[in-house]
Length: 558
Image (tube, rainbow, N blue to C red; front, side, top):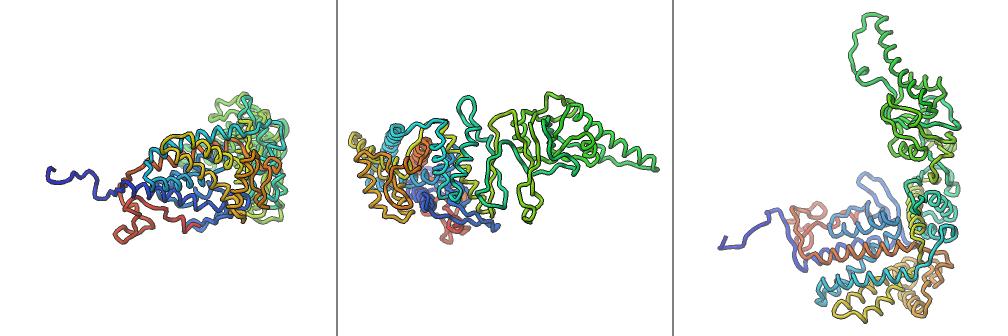
């Protein structure tokens, strides 16, 4: 050991250090941002993703794109986490957050080439992020929970450019109604109380908000009632079938008398289960498992409507909405375990002439519920791809309207907050000492990347747009942004382009966290062959500098 260096890594391990490691990580992070850059804004382009099974996803939703793409680099995955965090926290702004993270990394690389130490850049970025948060809070406008117009503008802004624009006004109104109904006593929004369902056929304009819970399951027997008023509801975590021990047992039948006795024992067991349900007073039953035909006939005789193999999410929604307990043992069942629904009825959604998914022509609706705030947004559309994209837009809108209601603060869109923050950062940089000042200025430049991209994606001159916006903001017009359709600068609140404050603050925080984490990495050690595209490194297929795997599959997915 004294005659040579100590070896602590296995032969299969790979190590990339110093500038090579940092350069590799910065490049991977920037690549993610560049991939989805063209999707930003109301006139952004869509991407088509095709997986190995031939399934196609057409969307411009940032988090959907990044989740579907085959990202195979740890640094790139950190940028994907930015989008995931943004989606979980707010529901929109994922593309903006990723573009900001990419711009921060790109400008950081320029500073590194000037021999600025990474810790100085990180410190400057952290300082700048605090300043930006203060700027956003100062320019935010309060929104009242009863201000329907502003809330619908918030919903509409999130939908713009996502395939739902043809019915944006209708969908925005539905989203606001659904979110308002889901507000808890403490002012927070129970987003789980709002369900979004797809039904093929008709047009998007035929979409609607249904106050209640609905699902596509037929009653187990054709003679069961499809319209029950004042219903007591049992949510049963089991089946109404002969027990497995009885079914699995081998029986030796000597004559017809023995056979008849065997059948009678099975029927007696089923009758006992149904009797427990009848004694409790249930009118409607949702069962986790199956329901035997003989049991179904007994339920019909007792005027009970039953559904079998109802999935867990649907059982949970009905239980919450009706106030029912989820019962696992019929022996313990009492009337206190039942929930209540004013109406349980079957409603035909699809035209019966439509052949597609003809087995799901109707849906069952649980309405007039004791638990307020439970609702379903019913989306209509002609094709699967259209409905999928509309659903993503509606789900994003639910998130942003919820954020606006909970925080009571909104910002103008169209790049206005970014330009205002950029100006504030350039002014703040003059008061920052040392090389951190350069990092603050780089942060300001990074913030201009989003409005620049908005203009580019809309087909307008990005430089002219930035110059004009900066001049207007410098003159005090803090709410002025770019109109993507005309390229003109307009007052965003008057133009109806509004975003929750939380969208911007969350985007800044998550982008800065990811960028600074990547900047602080100066050594990458991989515990095996993580070469790109399935090629061996000895054949020249390894990553730059012999480090970790690249982003194989992203190019092929586009």
